[in-house]
Image (cartoon, rainbow, N blue to C red; front, side, top):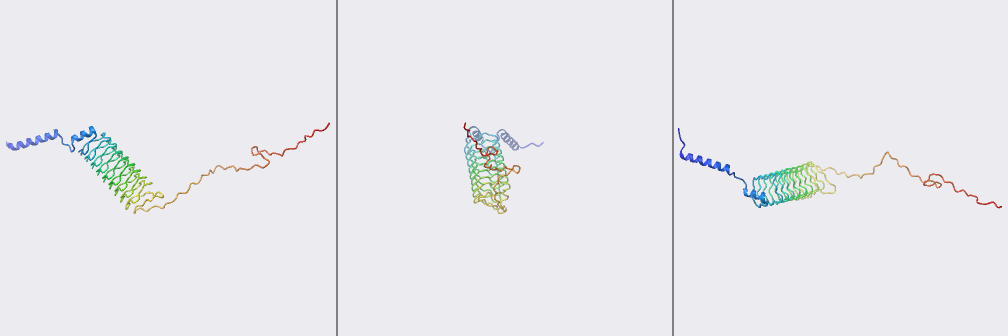
Length: 282
């Protein structure tokens, strides 16, 4: 029987010890102290929470300025009014999260999943949302000026009244999205999908729509350019609505009564008879 050398035996013991240490003390991609600090105080500037699980967490009004949240799970989390300016959320899961009135200016949301998230009155100015999934999100009255939304999925999204001035929407999917009364002045919509998009009252002054796919209406009097690949329809002015006439009701013509007839009582009036009031003398 051949025995293992003593050196090999020590190596096996060392490997087993390291394995037991890994099981008893698991390593985190984020700092455990930072995670405890966020959940207890909601104040953690420039913390390391990369890959943390914050599903359904209550982070309303939290201060996460410049925090690293790459690959973090924030599904269903409440971040109402939180400060995430300059945060790194690349590849993060934000499905059905409440991000209303959140400050995400200058943040990195590349490849993030925001399916069904609430983004009303959010600040996403100068944010990077390249290839992000924003399907069915509520962007109403949001500030997305100068943001990078190239190749992003914005189908069925509500962007009513949103500010997208100077935004990059090259190759973005905006099918069946609501962009009514939104500001897209100077935006880049080159190659964007506009099938079924609502652009009623949208400001597209100076926007780049070359190669855009889809059809949208032109509101009378508004300077909306058309995509090069789409032939604009002929504008037909509205015909003024005429008053409806009831065919089954014939108005009775008004007939002026004759001079010898009372207007109230349609009975002919005879001239007054002169009576003889002379009394014979006795």
